[in-house]
Image 1 (cartoon, rainbow, N blue to C red):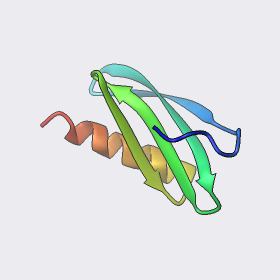
Image 2 (cartoon, helix red, strand yellow):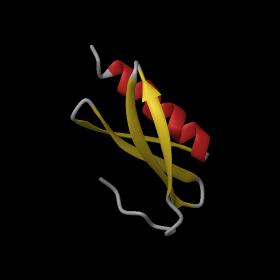
Image 3 (cartoon, rainbow, N blue to C red):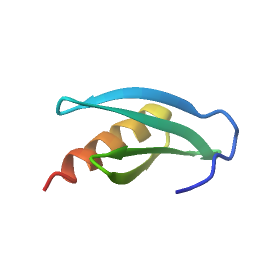
Length: 67
């Protein structure tokens, strides 16, 4: 997993398909945010240009990991 670059990580509680998770979002560069978390034992990372975008991308990838 990537390292927290700006020191301003925010942890969000997320419930995905009934399972509670914690996802940490941080800014790795001026225009890149990374969301990291574990869902059902799998480490998942999503990136986007905004914090909420990265969180949404993480959620999407976690849902797809069910397949």
